[in-house]
Image (tube, rainbow, N blue to C red; front, side, top):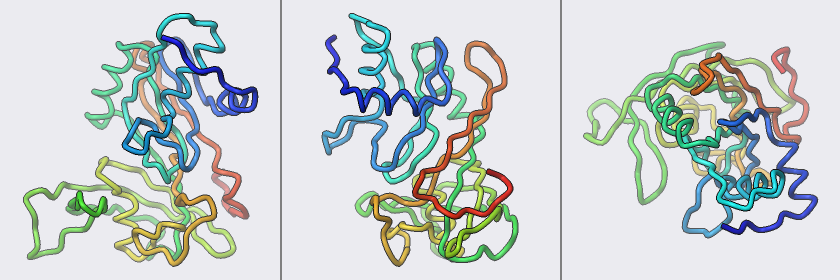
Length: 240
């Protein structure tokens, strides 16, 4: 396998975004607009970028293994876990599936949350044609609806937006975007779910901030944090 040669600028950028690495794992800070897995756009996914990076850094002539145990949507930034071995990938897949990975997101929202902290639970369903999720209302239940749970906490604000931390308890399609929008707190820049205007970078202000899990091979407890994008200016919180 021959990987493309990265430019000096791209190589250094990818290097600076590594949050944790060992022989089994690679945890990186994804940028808005990047895809983690190949899709119909044909754009190079993050997994392939880091294959090329590892091949170049470690002078590997053979194939580099980078597996994807989870996904982040294209307009979302933050922590992305990659597996460097098939053993780690298999175990991480099971851990994500079984809820053994604790995921925390930060979101800038367009309205003040109704409560300081709340556990949101309900049924949501995905409209494949629109690529959008909806809350199921009483009397309008659907067989394809799935249980969705999260806990949000209001932790700060900027001059115009409110900052919430979300602990994601289930991993449904667009779950955070859908549930926050439903309570009147649309995420900044999220036109699909009712934001009044887009962000300059075309993304949304939702960031995978922190992740905690048991290392799939070493069996040590891990917590990794990702710094928020530089475009998130003026955040006033004690939790940074």
